[in-house]
Length: 331
Image (cartoon, rainbow, N blue to C red; front, side, top):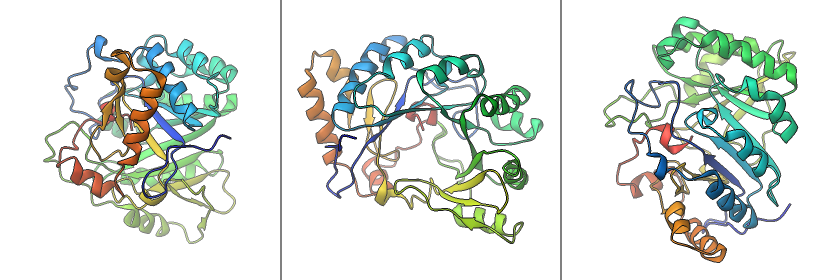
């Protein structure tokens, strides 16, 4: 694997790009965007797939070896499969993973496997059809739930992402863990974040990673902590004898900043070196002005060199303006 030249001033090496291919989604999850939606990007403001392929090649030349495709919901954008097929042969790229809400990916399963994409994260916040509808504002639970087992049967490595919040889905935490008893699933519980497209007045959930673990440990007397990858954002566990595992991601507490190896590119070309920070450069604009590969490399390297120490410093740098929809940020 080529060693990344994307190293920030704190010595962290970046080799993981989260690439959003659209800000649109067919769900309206309360923690992501308002029920009426957001001001979605105009088509001309979205990067074309060719632009994404060109920028991805530049990133991989600089040492990015893993790209996660995010949205919005990636599969709502026409042309996503031909794009993924072309992306899969990018020099230096070792792995492509996908995050989806699970409503549209089933019909693409065979082609995804053919391309070599085997890791899929499904956002699922409840195992109750009623609570699912309250959270997503859509009645799609049955299809999403059934799709998870079809993915497993097809040989995919499936992770379920569950945002934990009071009065929303606490009663689903234990059933999610019980789902790992007979299935090789990895369930990750996430702290709620303030990226919901609102004015920021929504009260932050007090279910942090410590409280989530305390709740789980109150139901299980035997929990084994697993050894995680050095750059993992989740602290992972397993109930002895269970086929799968679970993890807790301190997404709002930001305890993993010291080993963060991620960089984010939005569907409109905004480059972020931290989820909590402002966009540092718009690579779509730089590219459309005729920038050479060398120019693009310099822009990316300079952006990384100015990366803040952690999410709190990045939040300060954004002057408090961090309440952009997660659909725009790309997760």
